[in-house]
Image (cartoon, rainbow, N blue to C red; front, side):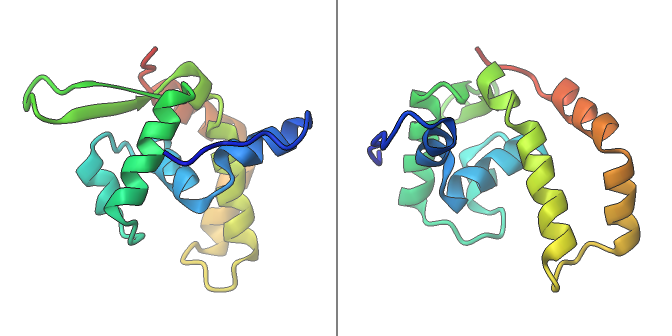
Length: 137
């Protein structure tokens, strides 16, 4: 697992030290916004994440209490990953990143209409995502 080194007492620095790589946020995106819960789901999400990176990030997220895991009842060799309360608190940030990326990426697949709809309904959308997440504490 990659080691997290605290550089300062700044809250933004702490957040970036812990979450500041693209793979971590993509795993959180898939959990919070796309309903994914299994290692295989994250691996085949279309981002091309290497297996060692995925394993490392899942372990790190679990170590820092952002996600939890349990043995999957139907297939006992599989782990079921889900957000903790601490992880669920990141959903508004994920949605804001989605909006910002959709707004400023000239190659975004999101239509202007869809972007405007999500911006106008952002609070409702955040509540729907937060309420839909089963917390694993």
